[in-house]
Structures are given as structure tokens and as C-alpha cells.
Amino acid sequence: MVNLIIDMGTSNTRLYRIEDGVKTSEAAVAFGARATAEQGQAAMYALLHGKIEEVMQGCSEPLEAIFVYGMGGSEYGIALTERIKAPVTAQEISKNLNQVNIPELWNAPVYVIPGVFCQNTDDGITEIMRGEETETVDFLAHNKITEKSLLILPGSHCKTIRLGTDGSIEYFSSAMTGEMLQSMAENTILKTAVDLKVEPDVAFLIKGAEAARKTGMNNALLQVRTMQCAETYSVTQMSSFFMGAVLYPEINYIVSHAATETVYVGGKVSLQTIYCALLDFYGTKKAVAVENAAGLGLCGALEILRLRQKSAEKAQLIENIKANKIIAIIRGLKKEDYLPTVEALYDGGIRLAEITFDATGKRSDEETAEIIGMLSEHFKGKMQIGAGTVLKPSQVRLTAKHGGKYIISPNFDADVIRETNHLSLVSIPGCFSPSEAVNAYNVGADFIKIFPNDLGLAKYIKALHAPLAHIPFMAVGGINEDNLAAMLKAGAVGVGIGSLLIDKKLIGEKDFAGITKKAENCVKSAADC
Image 1 (tube, helix red, strand yellow):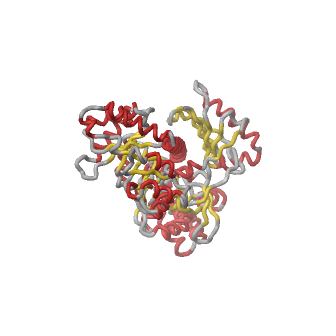
Image 2: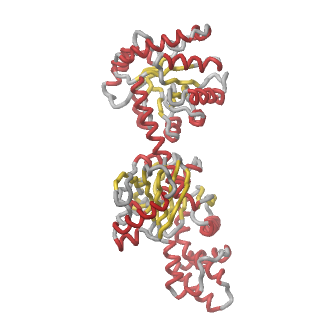
Image 3: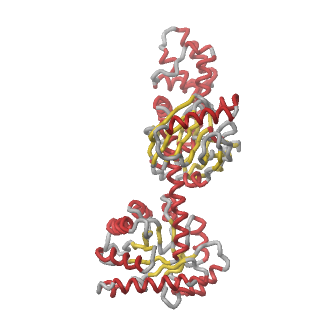
């Protein structure tokens, strides 16, 4: 599978050929949104078409799709696209890619990663970002955020981004600090006094920030000229003082919003050093430089591509569950009996099997996950294996690691559902009351397992389905050959079947043909509904 990622900025654009998730070729062109505004989109398309030809040289497979981020989604980009409102997660960004067809660019669909907007909590002004959301996606993919934090992305326009504990961009603010530094260093009386490329002197960086705090930025900047006239200060000292003075207002804003939270700093290493030094001096809980921050944009785009593929796989599995209707619940077998049992179920037409975690602790979670992994690999492309009796997020992670595709619980636990969705697995929590069912579905469940269902039988499913027809219910508990069809006709989209299918007497006698026969009977009953 070959895709192309285009990172379009204000002045420059980079193109990356991606084969099976790995970068294999790249090219750059000094043409961005500013040049498009002057020369028009036709010129931009023609230039990029040539660059795509260059990047695709030597590739034997056709280009499947082009993914664009940054200024590529602006009015002076590849295609103007609507931004999405924060708070927003990586999964939501991946689901809101804007598809356009631009034959002048290439004969392949173009997907533009949407920018993000929010209402600033301080003054109500609308803030926007294009590209930084993609960098943030990569940061969140590689850093497990368990508390509210700030991510700082310095550059021409610096973003201060509030991160939620659910891996979301909650809100953000923007500052022109980078442009201010460059403009004043190149276009004022200070241009012979400062050099933005020097290694900063932290002591003078802080002196400049303190001068801005006490007398204001403009007064502090004129002190740089006074330092130059004194002829006793080095360019490094004057430049550091200058940068501290310009950065102070932004640092003060960050500190006032960080409270006791960790602040992560991206950008170039030189900027990370400056920001972390000032943040530490002015009292943030902890300022942490992000490793490999220069590659956040490309890696974020790759993560969005991965999430898009996972989302498509999840959507297909949801349809498979609805089509096949029966999930076999396999609990407490000897390890050596799982494979022949599932093979017998497959021979009988079952295509979904749930391997339950052991709540008694007799079998460890790791052992259960290994069984899930063994079956997932053996039946790859034939059956979908999931986990049952999932009571905690760590079991969700184990299931995902070993190839399980869906998570079934006897209860409603919001953290389990969120972790399931975070890992792009299908969520099937257990609920009994209407309130539980609605709450679980609103949190993000894909199906609601009515459990224990044998208390209400088909009448209860029918009663729930009437006012909650938008929620896909599955009936679990007490399913037998007599009521299976009734459950489906009452409104359940599927059923979970345990002891009826997993007859331990037959398994103990190695009568797997008997298991196959039971499976055939259940599949036939479901097919008739």
C-alpha cells in the first residue's frame, strides 16, 4: 500500500512517500501558502505534480491516496477544508478527513487532515490551528497523559495546547512570538546587537525576562541597545537578554495557565532549551523537552493514517457482528482444548468467539491473553477473536497487544470503554437498566450487552428496543435453542452463547463433532431470523 503525505507550510512544502507505514522517499519545494496566494492554485498544483512524480520514481505500485496537513487545508492550500471544534481526540480527527479529488495534482483521492478551532477561555476569541493538531496527535500517541497538561509548540506562531486526560486537545491559544523575535532582530536598531542563532546564556535570558516583567517588554528591549553601546557585553549575552524580554509575556501566560501541571515543550532543540529554562525559573511544576520533536508532524500524519485504517477495520467488524449474530462465549477450558473447540465452532459456522478473562484469578490475565493471541493468529482472516469478562483497562491493552478485536464486559465501566475506543477495538459492555445502556452508549459503546438476560427473556429486549431503537442490543445469558430466535426477533442484533455451545461434557470426551453440530443448529436458527 503506497500513500503520499504532503506537509504544506507558509513558505515550504515537503512530500513523503509512505509504503506500508514506512517513509521510503521524500522531496521538498520552496513553495507554500504564501506563494499560492501570489501565483494561484494552478501554479501550485503544477509544481506539486512534478514533485509527486519525483517522489514516486522507482515505485512499482500505484499511489492509493494523498494525505495533506498544515496550511494545505487553508484557502491558499491544496483544498480549503472546514476545521473541527475542540475538544477533539486523534480518533475524531482521523474520522473527519476531508476527501477531495484534484486531477491536476494527481489521479488519486486527496484527504486533508482538518485543522482545529476553539473559543479561547480568556477572551472568547476564536483560535485556529493548522498542522499543530497533527503534531499533537503524534505526541499523544507516544506519551501516555494521565493528568491535565500543557503542550507548547514554539515556532513562527507558538501554540499553547491544553491536553485532557482522555488524550484530547481541550483548547489552545496562539502567539506570534517567533515572528516577533525575527522581525525585531532583523528590522530594528537591534539588528547589529543580536543573533538568534547563538547558544543562549541562561543567566542573561532570565535577566531579559525579568527586565520585561518589571518595566515592560519595550523598555527591556531598549536596554539591549544600551548594552551594545556599553561595549562590555557579548553578542551571546545581548541576544539572550533580547530573547528573554520578547518571550516573557508568553512565558507568563503559560505559567499562569499551568498551575501545578507538567508543561511539555516541542520545537527545535534550541527553542526547547530557552522555553524550559524560563518555565523552570518562573515556577512551573515541571518543564519537559519533547524528544525528537522535529518529526512530530510526519509521525502524527502517519498515526492519523493508522487510526483511519483501524477505524475502517472496526466498522467492518461491527458489520460482521451484526451479520453473523452469534458470539460463542468460551470460559474455563484447559489450555489444550481451546484450539480444537474453536475449530469445531468454525466448522459449524460460528465466526466470532469470546475468550473470557478469569475473574477468580486461577488463570492469569497474561495466560488468557496468550490464548487470545494463539487463536487470533491461527484463525486470522477466518474468525474474529475477542475478550470477555473484561473488568479493567489493563485487560483491554493485553487483548489489543495479542490481536483481540472486541471487548466484552459483564458491567459498564467508562474507563474500559474509553480504553477500548482508544485502541480502536469494538466495545460491548454489559448493562441491564435503560439508564445504564444509554450512559454506556453515550460514552462510546458500540453494542450494549443485556446481561443477565435470562431474568427478562425476549420480552425485556423488546421493551428496551422500543424506546431505544438507536442502540444495538445483544442478549447474553440463558440463551438456548428455544429462545435464540425469539431474542433476535424481539430486537437484539446478536446473542452471546456459552454453555449451549461450549458443552464441557462433549469437550471432555473429545467429541468435537458434537460441538460442531450444536454450532450448526444455532447458526441455522439465527439465519432464519
